[in-house]
Image 1 (cartoon, one colour):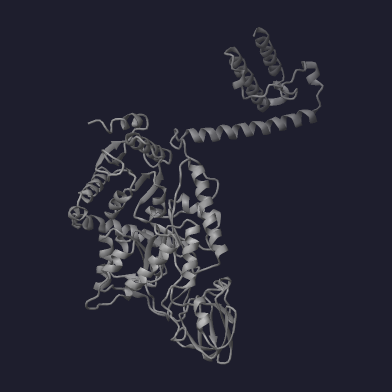
Image 2 (cartoon, helix red, strand yellow; image 1 turned 180 degrees about the vertical axis):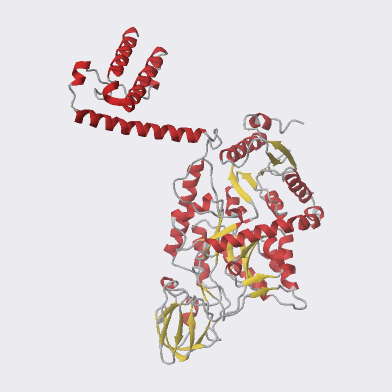
Length: 631
């Protein structure tokens, strides 16, 4: 130790002698070097040399040991180069010190946050959005952005694309789930549903989905049932989902496409119908096709069976029928699901809401009770808007935007679906594209009742951002009045669960809770909580993985997997511990904020019947969880 101190004194003396030649900047650099050596001596005194972050072997250039006579023999060029190099090192050191000082000026306010070094997209109201999976937006980077923004609901149209294309979309989504789960350190699960191919016949999409062709008399057109052409149609060949009708067609039969285009079959080659245009008309993507009258167009199609099989193989738990149909249609569809061993799949239907007109003796109750999920769309005047599979729109003629004014039948239908606690997913494309404006009397049907809004892939983020900003503003404006006027449903639940759910939501509003943690095996209570449209997010902790297939379709519900335990109290305690840790790690709750814990007091099978308000403290919340079951 004494020898080290002696060497330090010698170095200090030599540094002082070299002051006149190297200047003030070099002295500062030497002072820095001396400071590093002093720190090394202190560390060695406490036996912590392994903590030394400074180089142990220094060159002669950094630590000059020449005597005064030798140093005077250095020429000016050597001194200049040495001084210039050390001046550069000094400037780097000063830059580091300034950056450290700048970070310290925030007094640790941003400690624990990650500073992004690249631009990231901002998605408003991510948990209210449902994203369409297609070849346009299924690349891993885009899907990762969606998941980081909090989007947990996705869907795909099985009418569009080949089986390989759709498999690639699902594969990319599942891979992104795993990647984000590893990044967060917690399982990330999404709900994925699919829309079946329509039982009625339609043409596929052109390679350019906005293309419109004027077909003249005498031209040839091939209608094919090969799905390779479902998104690759052209003027001479286009896809039609009518494989089971090809065998029933005969030479000379007429087929109507759209409102006016008529073609006559001149030859049948395998899965292709070669036709000749007999009446001129317009050919565009997703046009209705009417085959000869003797063909049975209402039976289950081959495309539907292929779609159901594909959904089963890819683990999709919710299927949406293109139409509600009739009670016989629903019964046939359920029988097909049973034959394909898909009884556990949830079945929904697509409803064009503004097509429901005032009619006497109209009964929609069987639709509300028979289906589990409802996909709400709106019809736009065909002369002003043509929809494409990538969400693109082509304006055929200039028309004024329409005002959406729903009939009483449509309004009552949507309210009935809401009262039955069924998931409502609405297509907001007409509102984003400013094709429809909502009459204030229909604000609840558009801005309050829907659980999710799905966005077409090709619409700009700015227009989508505007719509979600508008939706959130109107929702917050309507929420107090609709919440206070909503009736109690304790008589319908027959167990008081609806009253408990309503009380829990009221407590979350009163204490401005950061989150509601619900620990249960069954998802029923999460759906009941979502029914009251809480502003506070609901984190559903469950060991039932199958519920992840559909639970995120409901308003503000996020699924978190919790490993099952034979001891119910241990399951609840560990579940809440996992949930609170997740909220703390993701910066979703801070000290002093309230979190509501909801659970069943006796059994994991019964619906939760108890909730407590926990004032979060990062240091003591684990100890407080042990008091949940103390009477």
